[in-house]
Length: 203
Image (cartoon, one colour):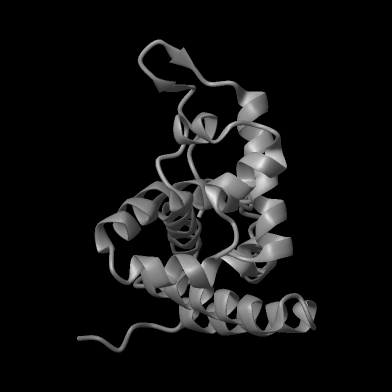
């Protein structure tokens, strides 16, 4: 669920300052961890970052937009490179998803964001399009390659595997963090592999 690069300009004729952006995002992450989602207001972030609130509003139109970028900043990762071993690849993906969701700032923010998305499906869809689709496509490419080489079923459902991976790791992160993470990741990788190699029963 990696995010694309942020715009380099916050408006016509107004260049973005990468250092200020990083300062504000770091302050937002710190507040999420120390004070929680509800207390992470734009004013509080401005105080923590040592900037004026208007500087934040010029970059992020709302608290939710800022928190999304703060969380996605944690996800600025490279997708795992295929190794030729599907089980090892699925294990790498599971570890990546779990570590991303289990970051303290993410664990603090996600429940609050999900509550807000419940009443604003358009914003949630924009978030998915921005952050989820590139990751979903990377996983699909991995499974398509595995199917071509006979390491996965020809009708392997990449979307179903993505949903299983995301759901399992997100719930685990929110409820247990990284406790017994290695054992959990191996269990999930085994389950995902079983789904990937099993022919579909759909007619």
